[in-house]
Length: 115
Length: 113
Image (cartoon, rainbow over all chains, first blue to last red; front, side):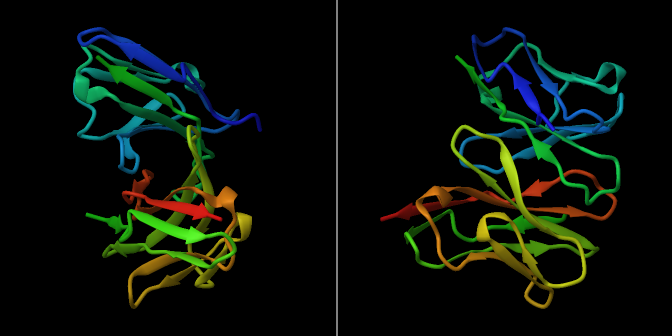
């Protein structure tokens, strides 16, 4: 396994700009998750895909956030009209589709700073 | 709502000393528990997980955890820590039919000479 990769690793943007992050899961992992981690906190669930279907979204995912996973491979997370409160680490994880207890493997994250 | 609580935000310990990082969970349904470690500027790595069966779970890097249903706890232990164990440790749960992990707030383990 080459591991979960995320791009970019760091992003600085001005308030009101749009940003897009990419996640490449481990090959053959059907499930893909997005989490957000703010300073001093544990990661919080944002959304989850099984193949290309987005099956669950957190209430944290406002209408400014959109995630896609075309063709069930890589995923993108877009934030429109960024706010300073969006500053956080955005983590992606993937797992095989063998039940809720399957291990989730995390990428290194994308650190977003909104000025 | 299902959740986990990590009672200590920071735990300082000397190298080669034992350590215990505490985690309590709350759930009214079947619970699956995990410990993850996060090194600086890196993603999370699974240390160990409890799904069912033996209550003593052994993980990587010499860590182990014990599931205690009566005390609703899942504390992480290591008999002798190294400088390289300095990191943030997260307890997490997956409950019921949900697929998402719910994390605690983390415990910063600081190992010094």
